[in-house]
Length: 190
Image (cartoon, rainbow, N blue to C red; front, side, top):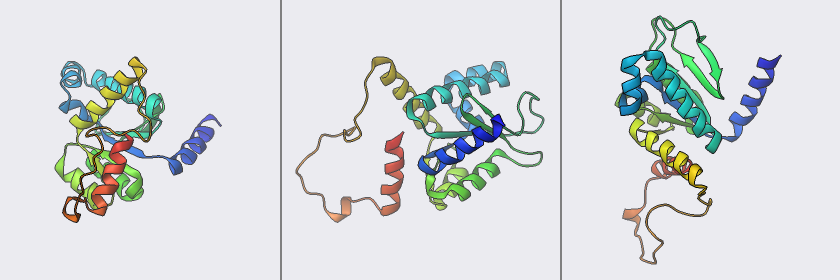
């Protein structure tokens, strides 16, 4: 019963929000802190990433799924599991996490934001209409969100990061393509 209620809540929230799909081992190996834990113990690296994602989810309320390669993985996790509000997916035997991520990006299309520094995965996700962000850039966004939460700072939805507004005219050559504008809109939600 509890699982059915959780699934129903997930489905309702899924229709309203951005779905962040994280290439788990790619993010772990791109992060100096997580890579250190990963070299010591693979399960500790995974758990640290899940903890970071859970803290980020508490702040931003996006749907987050982290995907790991699942060949011979720990019996602590099912091939589909959820911990601290983060969906955890392990690929099946004979399948890579990249294939799972590609399938999820193809399913969610424009609602998805794929976090991976793997060029093949990012290119495929972008071809399906999903936004992409590198593992390093996403880790920086998570750190910034955590810092802002600690300091009690909140960006207003209308407040912009970066350059101050200007009256200087921008010609058509300066305008991003429609696809780039949609991706930028998703990235601004992070």
